[in-house]
Image 1: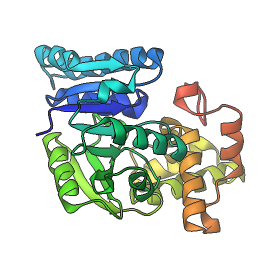
Image 2: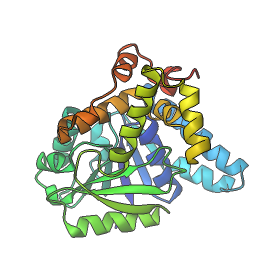
Image 3: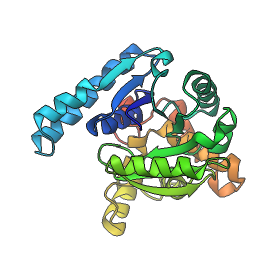
Length: 281
């Protein structure tokens, strides 16, 4: 029975995932090497839960109980006794592989190790451990407390029992699980990121301004948010990392990252988290 959950990474996705589990009665060990990141995460979670209370979607007592279930830690050893792990570190395979090797040595052999990766091979992450059957992808959408979808990625060695356990766990969280095979980008980002990349090409080539491109997609295609505003929300560095995975993994020139995207990332224009991307924040 899963009662305690370790979440690695206190960034946008990590603290959102931690909030979802805490709201649903799980004890959370939220780990990040940065104490400052943990403090920011705590503040963001308090603010998010406060909005739920203001809108009448959560009782004040339930908010306080959820906050009491959050236990921040800078040491990975804090996850030694958890029943389940979700890794939400930066989108870098070297970093994630190292974490999975360490988690494999640290946690009980029966513990499932899930990754919130947007595009990196679950099969390769599982191969870093002695329990590849208990490794899979659990890809939440941004922001996790609001978005209902969780993409479940089955690696080559992921067992059916592991997949079913995580499907049931998603339902306990009030989420809708959808299974995807372990191909670069899975389903969500294999469809989404080329659209964002093409929108950036439109800006670079002068086809339209960022506002024009987003307006067409919102008013003409009924998207709730334009692709460039969405790129800013996701983080342009994350978009670039995913496009690189698609380009390298699928070998198709149509997935080449737009030069403007590469230039903006190099300039530190990463979107909302840096204060400026295609828009100013």
